[in-house]
Length: 268
Ligand code: MF3
Ligand code: CO
Ligand code: CO
Image (cartoon, rainbow, N blue to C red; front, side, top):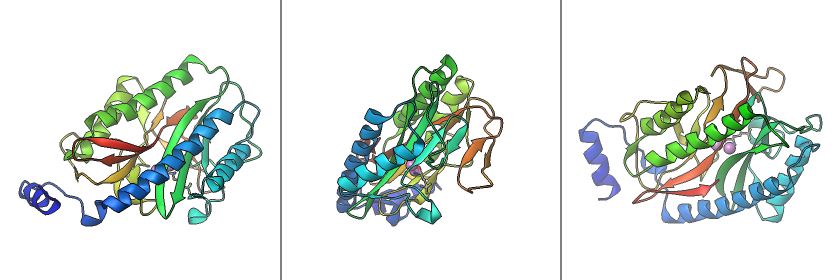
């Protein structure tokens, strides 16, 4: 069945359906797929080079140089005034950490590096967690469970699943492990722009919310806290989000496409 027929079908049962703009064309999908390949390569380079003693500014330089040499543009640089080419969020930083020469990676730290690449006008967005040296059991569990939360979300991803299924899967798994999910920041449509509709909450109720159609491309990027889910914004830089209680936080992000028979990971 095509888009119009499926829209009619779901409207009849009162379910919210995506707009036409939320469904990518074949050409857009191919462009975003290529951006994803570049984005993956950049994160692979970070994975290879990251080490204790390095500053987060050095990570930013690595990302910037890799992006340019692969023919891309780092989307964060200058985005709504963001000053660097990627986000580096360490320990109790939830997201949007700004790379700095003052932040030196030390043994036992955990850090998220979030990379978004524009390639031929198309965007792909992904992030990974990195452990520096020997990390303690509680950090290890936090990173593992965060990766599992994203994996749980992928398990429910199929054509015509509901937006609430995704968030439910994430929060259910986090809570099962004694952790909390940040509610204030979510995933997003991506591809033609950096942050597109729909907004993707990392919590929700199964069988509710937007019907997820084939051709939709969006990120899933859960932020999982070991303590309270409450967060605050850095008043100095107006970007970086921290946990309210100082507990550590982890995040992973993929760009995904809903296909006719499942999903495809475009950036990870
Ligand atoms: N990459 C982040 C996301 O996952 C957004 C960062 S916005 C920036 O949506 F300006 F901080 F780069
Ligand atoms: Co994102
Ligand atoms: Co991102």
